[in-house]
Image (cartoon, rainbow, N blue to C red):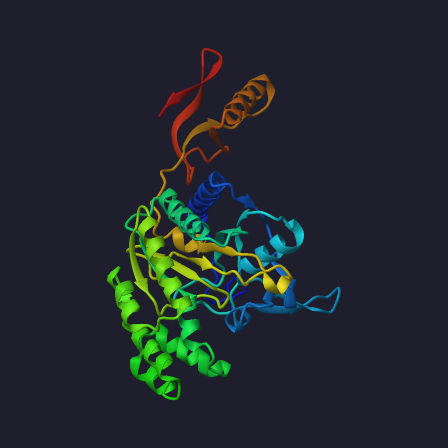
Length: 386
């Protein structure tokens, strides 16, 4: 095998796409900052017990593990940034009121989460800690939509669910982890026959409620149907009421519901959302409430947020035009070269892109749209149109 062949589902990002990704990164961080979110930069690797505490088996299986040559302890390369941000909120900031944090950096997955996906997503996310009310859920969701709008992604649909519904239907049932995973999988794939077989020994209310979930997806009518067919327990009623309120406040996107949706990591504890657009193979954004994520760090604060992969987003975001640039000759020696370099420096100081054509390569300018040239006229360097 050639030394330069990369591992499966790992790829270089070449100039044009890298430029677009960086432009999106800046736009999304600026959008989050406009909401009052502060940027944090967690490390790429941590002690394994800190990185995986409380996150569930799915994240454990997605995490690359290695031995620290300094301490001999096991380390993990992060597969998701949310647990790290929860640690920062709990132990480093330790604020009493509301804390808004955002981040953008690579994560690594042992396996792609779907066909043709990268194992090295560039994860952007935003999280708000310290407020248990629906207002924080709405803020996170609206920020996610505004980030997609900043990326010029149109025709957005928000699909909503609530983790408390399935949890309530399973409450009091002693399930081994493998069986629980099978029930979740049957719900996610809407496999009614498999779900019936798995739940045949469950209490009647739980069995019938889970069976009803398989068909509870679609528009707002789903919530009315859910009130008819799901058990009238407080957690379920509260979840349905909250979903109805959230949907009524969404701006700039269509809404739908899938009450059996359990995709994502196990730390979600309340309302969940996924944002879709035509042309994307899966949800562009996933997020929701995860009040329990900080408990393992000794500070169980209300929390809600979302994340997305910039490498996936770039595939559906509108292309930005190339930034207009100025082509300049190579400076050379002597007074003339000094004057030319001073003119180039002044232009760059004003924010212009100036590409110097090296000797013998006058026509080789890639990636930049040179619509002007720096030329010498009457002993002065001036910018002229091409």
